[in-house]
Image (cartoon, rainbow, N blue to C red; front, side, top):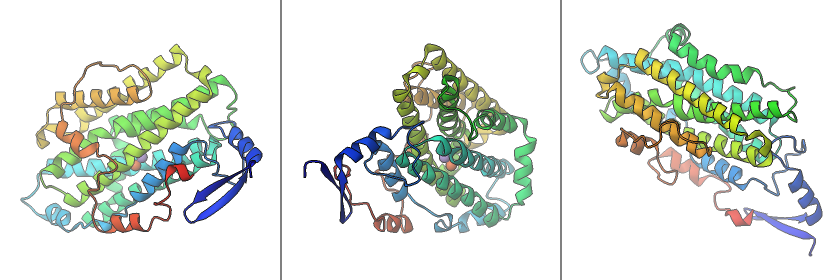
Length: 363
Ligand code: FE
Ligand code: MN
């Protein structure tokens, strides 16, 4: 029938009334769209969001899948590790224990809360869940190594360069709880700023100092279990960065009035501040020499990563032409999503993924 369209999901076919479908499609917006309690995923207006959801689902992992025996042996031995290496691990666990929770809370209670299209809510729900998995993996590390949890907590609260990173992101989160009028230009910009800050500055740039440190240890065969979990986490983070980038670009397409030259400069300045906070944190807390890296190179690495984030959002880089001083780290971090370096259980999650065989054009 001419006014009906068939949608196939897995083994099932649904007939949609064309007119109603077109109306539902038109009503879907990043913000200020139709509020629907029915969670109408079809017809998809943002296919990239559903694709990303599927990718994230096939990457599923659980902390208990990763053996920690070797890490425990190293942690307890008196000659295999230096105090500096133990400090880096404590720092990593302490920082991320709090940071993962901050990101998850903002995704759930600010971004997902105010976005209206169901497929966007779907992928943001998955994002928040992955932050739970990351938080759970840190709990698993703490309990495996027998670290006193209050020690990690205290570290997070007592180190000023960490507290400043925390306050930097929290101030744009507190302003944006549910009753804000998103038809106002300045509020739309505040919302856009929140997405940029969390996706590109925090997850996309400020996570990379410690990621680099821990993966540098991993590269020297120290903490293989923890290193593996951080690689899983990084693969997830690269999807979070991409999700919040695409969401910001979609918001901008639908609300072009937000994207003024002043606003673009404001976003670039926020990234500049994020970088400075990360560099002072590295200088203050990360004994980079101990893992065979130099402070200058590490600083350059942060510049390099930040500019990739800016370019992803169609913003001019802050240090044009800066090169990546750690190509090995890029290899370990910027893993292509197709590349399957996972073994065992993760493959089983992929096999059991119900919709894995549905192609894009079928939706
Ligand atoms: Fe995370
Ligand atoms: Mn994340």
